[in-house]
Image (cartoon, rainbow, N blue to C red; front, side):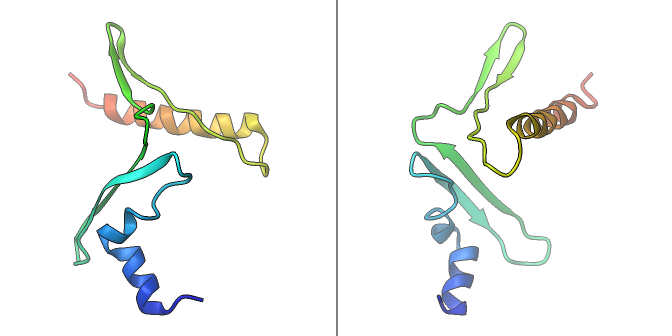
Length: 99
């Protein structure tokens, strides 16, 4: 078991976060910053090392491409519906109040 000070440092220091904030070895965390003050913010970026996850601008608009690896606890259909719901929420959010 790791000591509390190591756990806290690894969880809160941006340079440490870059070492663990990804799901597999083909992903990485190229950007991490945080401010541990009242009202502070944290920003972590998780990205594919081969840059395959991206936004593509087309004549019809922006295409967001996502891929997921299903887990075993829930059906693929349920997982797909959940992620589609998240993407729909994102779409609604970014298109809100557009003139």
